[in-house]
Each structure stands twice: as structure tokens, then as C-alpha cells.
Length: 445
Image (cartoon, rainbow, N blue to C red; front, side, top):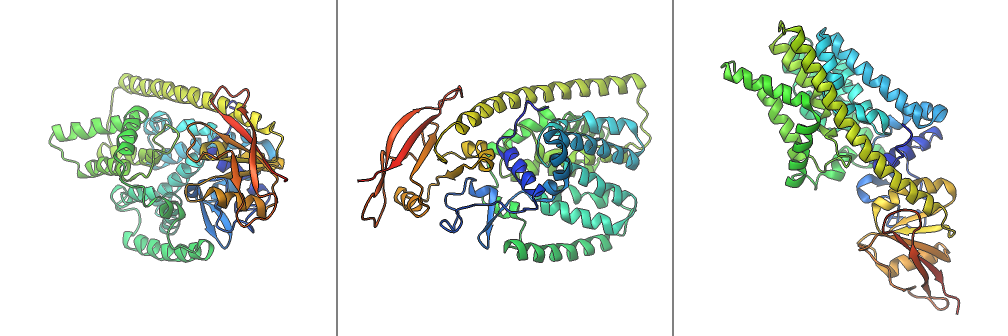
């Protein structure tokens, strides 16, 4: 579906993938010599980590490396095709674990995860690796199970809540003491590798988000998305409540439900896509827990068909609604990108990270993109422009601007031609949004 163009963190993933096709695994910044602290780097601090004067994305490069060949050959369609088959492979792996085609169908249609087939994002890639981990666990391969568990927890720390249930779902599959010992050794090994690359023992995503945990607005929003977009969770709750009514107290299912809510509580943000993507990792856990509790469950075929049809139609409706929203957002952002591309000055400055994300593709079209931050003074920005010998720039903003620029920017410790003056200001055309841009020129007295 080419109607959805990359924006927000999708743009970052696409940028990483393009760089991956060139064998580049950091985020290049042409002005790092003049701006060693990356104060004007076009991404917000949450999305990159600075090590040895190189910026690395907080999203691990594994996804970008794996999909870059298909992207190089077929563009975004290549990634969509890859993700479609990865999702089907995930369903096939669950079937091989449970030997239950009904549960496999529920995995495919029981949530809005299918939406990510159309998006440049690592959600389905991580989900596939999770299913590979579960498959190796069920097939009693302790080494590969531990290896994939550690890699995935490093990529997505929230999956620790998922993998802690593996010993209870597969109690006799592998020697669990050996599994946890091997995971511990691998975690130490990966931590030292991580320190070598990024100068921190913690996963970058965990380190960047550790101060954002515990927002109740995020919790309530994610719980609403959970109820709306994962009907499989409602089915799981139905079985859980039924068990307790029948006085068959299933502690494992109760703990899985509590862990799901706990992830909603500790999530640092909503994920930004209007989906419960942090919770998709629980999908196979719900189904395997039901399978274990009711291994010989024989439901009337008509009821099974009705349930599958209802879940499929409901999920299709949800996915279609989300696609319409994303397509609408994408259209606005594509128009905005096209308008910014037509701006004649080479340097574009933003005070809003949503706008700088939109502009990332312009980096490959000989444009300079800078993002203003709260902790940088206006004179500091003017001095930076002076050092880089930038004589003119355009400031793009959506009012009210969080960091507005005055009509004149003064360069400190300057003897001649010491300010940048606003010479023009007008709306950005053809965007259907209240975006304005101001043209600044360095004065020559």
C-alpha cells in the first residue's frame, strides 16, 4: 500500500534502512565537527544515542539490515511483502507448537497487528522472532531459545514480561535452570558488547525511556487500545472468568492478565501509532495458555466459525479504520514534504520534531535540516550558523511555536555582519495546515 508514506518513527526506520543498503549503521550528521553535542541534530534526543561523536538510533539496526536487500530491490513494496510472509510464518510456527488450526487463525485475525504489514516498522519482525523463540522452546532447543530470548529482550525490553511465562507454558520442554543460566551469561556478554558500541550496559531504548515510566494518561490510553484492537484479549478474559466461575482457579492465566495490565502501566509512551503495539507480544501467550488449560476442548463447529468470522470482521474493521487515519496523516505529510522540497534555501530549521521527521528524506536531496531545542539559546544557534558559514536559512513552524525566533539573531563576539535578519514570512503552500516559514539572511553592513 504505497498510499501510506513514512512519517514519525516510520521515517527513521526508512532512513536507517536506506543507510543499511549503503553499509552505514549510524545516523550521519555533516555538522558534527561544529556541533559535537548534536544540539541541532534533526531528531529529538529520545530517538538517538551519542557515542564517540556518532549518533545511533534507539531502534536496533537488526531490522533495517534484514529488510534492506528487499528495500534495495523493490522499495517499500519489498518490505511489505517480507512482513506479510513473516506474519504468515509466525502463524505457521504457532500451529506447529499447538497443532491447532483454530488457534492459528485467531493469531492471524485476533488483533490489529496485520496493520504493520503495510508500515516500515519492526513490529512484525520482532513478533516473528518471538514466535521463533517459542518454537525453539517447544522443540526443546535450550541454546537457541535462550539466545533469541536475550536478543529480543535487548531489542524490546517489554518482552521480559512475556518470556517469564515460558517455564510455565512449557514446563517439561527444556531444562529451565540451564536456560536461565545461559540467558544470564548471554545478557552479560551482550551488555559488554553494548558497552563497547554505545558506552552503556543498558539497552538504548531502556536507557532513553527510563524517566518516562508511570504516566497514567498513557496507561489508560493503552488499556483502551487493548480492549478495542485485541479481541483475542477479550476471548482470553472470557476463559479466565469462566474458569473462576467454575471454581477452576487458573493462577497462570490470572498472572498473564496482570502482566498485560502491568505493561500498560510501565510503558513510557503510547507508541505513537494509535495501536497497542507494546502488547502484541502477549498474543501467542494468550492462545497457548488457553490451549494448555483446554487441550481437548471440543467446541461446536458452528460456534467456532461464528467466533472466527466475528473476530476477523471486527479486526478488519479496526485495521481499515487505522489505515484510513494513517493514509490521511500521510497525505498531509507528503504535501508538506513536497512544499518544503520546493524551498530554495538549502538550510531548513524546525522547532517541532514532528516536522523534522517529515523532512528526513530531504537529507538525501542536498538539504541541511536542524532542530531547535529548549536548552539552546538563540545566540548559540546564531554562533553555530556563523561557524558553519551558512548565510541564509528558512525557519518552518506551526504556531504556537515552542521556540520562536525573533526578527533578528545576533552573533556573539562578532565584529562585522553580525546578525541574521528575517526578510520574509509567509504560509507554506499546498499543505492544508497552518504551517508558516520565515526566510532569514545574514546582513552585510
